[in-house]
Image 1 (tube, rainbow, N blue to C red):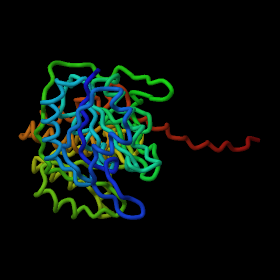
Image 2 (cartoon, rainbow, N blue to C red):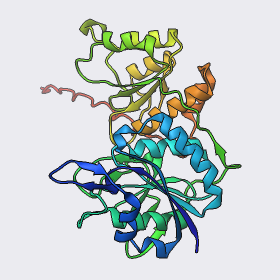
Image 3 (spheres, helix red, strand yellow):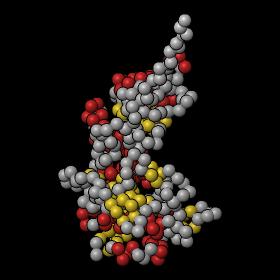
Image 4 (tube, rainbow, N blue to C red):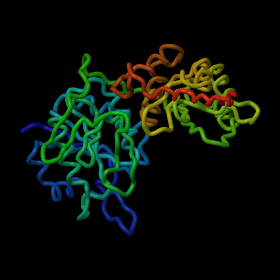
Length: 353
């Protein structure tokens, strides 16, 4: 039988107790064998307990440890499944996609909206689909949820109380597991399997909103090494000086301090193009990098890795942020439609004679 590593990190899937009382971590493996014996008919599964945490406790240090562990273990298996809480699942999937370059087998993350021990749990099917995806899916880091396989660094959690909790707004699914299971080819392998576990977590995520006082992020600059800015639309921010809330000083001071600024969009679909509007052009002139159609979670983790691998910043870091590492952003095609042409006012024609 093919061999699959099942690495448990915690989350709702492996918890017990529940509604109306609070969920609590529980012995996962016993429940797994009792509730999902079909898994062991698909593959020779080796169970490992990496951690038993609510995913809100997941931190960059744990990503690095997890990536190093998987780097050691993956060559021994035909696939790997990582069980994880849904709240930070997209962050962890993004981190592993950047840290595990050219994995020798599929690495599939999954979780559930209800614990495996509950009657109406989605955990059992998610686990079965994840193991099948680890055996037949593309050799990259993915998320398997609600019978769909997504590229890990393209995925966002969009729902809290429904089973179809994840979507990939700017990239097609890599697999559909219905009556038949079909998979796409995924990323092409480029070179040897390598580990890039270093991260610099001194990054701040700033969401632009009406009424944001620029004095607040300006006070943060001395304490951070990088900034992910979630702007409006194609990368727009307020820059009108007469209203007193221009963010132009933020970009200017960030450049003076050598702090990279990576701009992503609040829009769910499409992405950033800093050449379209005046405020984007200002950001470009001050050295900001457009994040194209990267998800906010992928941008945050990629900047952490970029700071660790290019501590001097500058153009090497900017080039790293602009270049796809694991299929996390689109290049070579527009990520936003061109602006609509301006309407011309009709000309009044006077009556003649």
